Length: 479
Image (cartoon, rainbow, N blue to C red; front, side, top):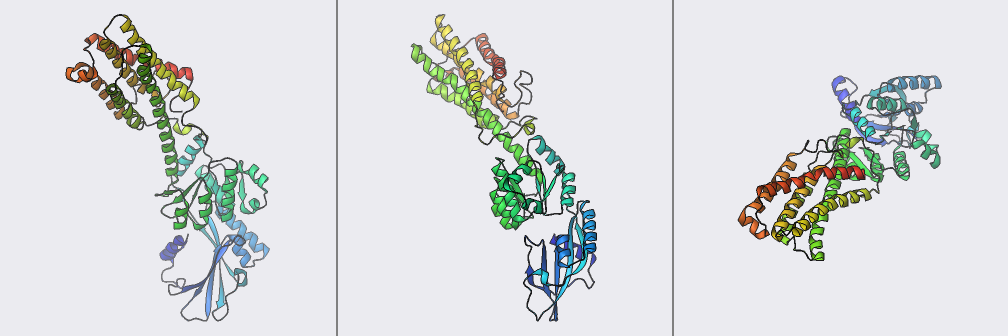
């Protein structure tokens, strides 16, 4: 605000008697809850008179000037007209004070002369309305809290796309009991002429209703509310040091849309982490089954430490790279916010993982046992079982990615990382089962091309079963 005044003076008042760079500030009367105006007392070069400049809410400055009711009504009407245009309206006044006299205790002790109204425009960034609309789609309620005139607040809220059927002022807020405030909070989205301590009260009231509150601010007076909010967000460029220290997050570009982008990124990270956990739990079910069942039933072992190490070389990149690189679904910001107590994996997620892993376990163990029952060598049976297991785990990556639980488009939208991991898995599997010196440490036997391709195809074909399981559970791995 002060910068706007100085820029205007530098552009229009240079060379006039209105600029006094040699004057020095000798006393400041700050804004107070009871008087929304501030005054500065300036002293010239040895003059007998000091000049007092006051600015603040039009009604407060008009009160300092002791204007008659008719003039106050005219000032109020003019201020309302300017506020309807979205302007921040300030009243300005001046007074004289003899340098030899003591400074008055309060601003009302000066004999102010009314000068007029000043309108300041603080245009919204072009991307703000779209960001507000995104918040609404994502189930995030945006509330405006400002010290501006109610009409200014209503006009700016309309420009931003914030519903403002009701505007609650600081004076009205002061007259509400806690139960009354609680009932109004769900109805009001614009709060005007709010005092600093009332910002903190609003944050605390919203938290008391179980809301997760993010508060933005840039001034010293915003610090208590920023500190009290679950997430305090300070402006990095125009924010004060106090506001930045009180906040948990600092915006480098002072851009509201960056908050929406951060929310989207947070939702994506949570969804991808959930997908990775569902996949991790599912692929370890058959590993446990193949490690325990042969021991329990007296069958030859399928998995040695080297086999498990190879499987982890498939699982780890899938969890740490493939799912982390997923771009998310188009409806990511159309979902309601998660509950604060929502676990990373719900019961349905665990059931889905166990069902997917159980299918792989049943198929792999069943094929292994059937081959042994047919009198096939243990080496052949374990080789087929391992190829089937790796192929099934690779196939499980496809439906575990973000996207609808349907068989359509499973191969569409694969990220480059996904393609490389899947291709690398199949190439490595082919190498350790066909190259003799690589197959020897694994105790694999050579498979005929038809056997190898048939086993691989059978494992990959399980993807259709995985999709059916998702439909049966009625849950996507990322939601």
